Amino acid sequence: MAHRSLGGRASAGVVLGAVLLATASCASTSSGGAKTPLSPGPSTTGTATTGATPTVSATVSSPSTPVDQNSPEAQAGIVTYRAMWADVVKVQATMNDNDLTLSHHLVGDALTYFHSATHINRLNGYVSAKGEPKLLDPVVTHVVGSGSSVQIVVTDCVDDSGYTKYTSDGTKVNDGDPGGRRFTQALVVPVDGGYKVKTFAYSRTGTC
Image (cartoon, rainbow, N blue to C red; front, top):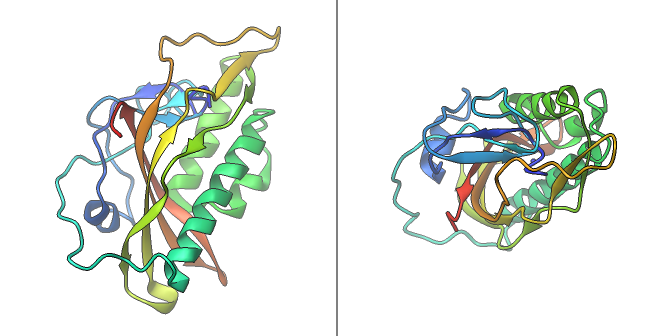
């Protein structure tokens, strides 16, 4: 979660696994130069193409035991994360903020963020986002709990340099940010018998 289409830019630090889990129930705060795909701008309400995803700055040690990427939890996390991006690309292709597709794999703060990003992009006159972000290396780095209370952190390096917004006259939006590789994390949780992304963090270009 486009021309950095999610919205404008926002500053944010890298959000690491343990902190993402700790802040799962509340909105993250911005602190560095980060952006959110097709999201709000400098704050959580910025321009829609390169949005800055609210993130939390912190240093967290990696789990002592690597997560089994073939476990049911890890597989569910990766599948949900990829599906989330597919939904974001679909919705931002028309910048229709009334499209309920975003709710298929997003909930809570993450849903609010991407919905706001799309809405802001539309208000700014951006009618579509073309291309799609490249998910270079999605892996599950944390699995906490089990069953209906499990929390899964997916960490990735996303290249959004080929994901661009356009105005109604077909002009490519030049927001001063060419895009690039960004450290990204998503917190996946069980919802109504399935899984959805609840918290999302998208850092500045060059962080991975």
